[in-house]
Length: 219
Image (tube, rainbow, N blue to C red; front, side):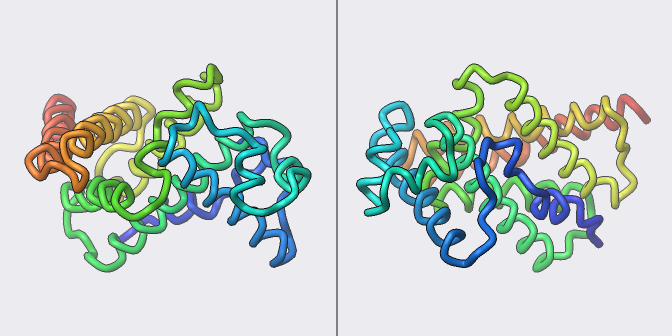
C-alpha cells in the first residue's frame, strides 16, 4: 500500500523553483523544452556540466539560442532545469517499481526506491553526472536544501505507510540514509560502468541498517 507521497512530489510544479522562465503549455513548446533538457543532459554526460554553455546546447538541438533563453534566463537556471528533469525521471521509475512490487514492509519499500536510483543511473541520460552534483556546486545552498528536504520528506511519507515516524527528526534520518545510498552508488559506477554489484548491494543494506538502528533507539 502506498501513501502516494512520491507521486505527489513527482506531480509538483518545479518551474519557479528551478528558474524556468516560462512554463510551456502548448505541445510544441513542451517538445522544445524536452529537447533542450535532453541535449543538455547528453552534453553533461559527454564533457561534464562545467563546460556546457547555452550556445553549445542551441547548436546541439538546432534551435535558436533565443529559444533556450525563452525557457532559461541563464546557464545556472538551465542546470537546475536539467537536475529537475533527471530527478523526475528517477521518481517515475521509483513510483512504477513500487506499484509493481507492492512492498509489504518499510524495508522493501525503501530498498525499492534505492534500487530505482541505480536503475536511473543506467537508463536516464545525465542522471549519473547531474544527480546530486550540480546543486551542491552552484553555490546556491538554499535551493540545494530545498531539493534534499523535498525528496527526503517524500520518501519518509512512503515509509510512514508501515507505521514509521513522520517527525522532522525522522525525515532527517531518512534523508541521510538516502544520501548515503547515493554516495555508494556513485562509487559503484565509478568502479564499473555497469555498477559494481557488491557496492550496489551495500548502497541498499547500509542505509537500511542505519534507519533500523535509529528506530531501535526510538523504540
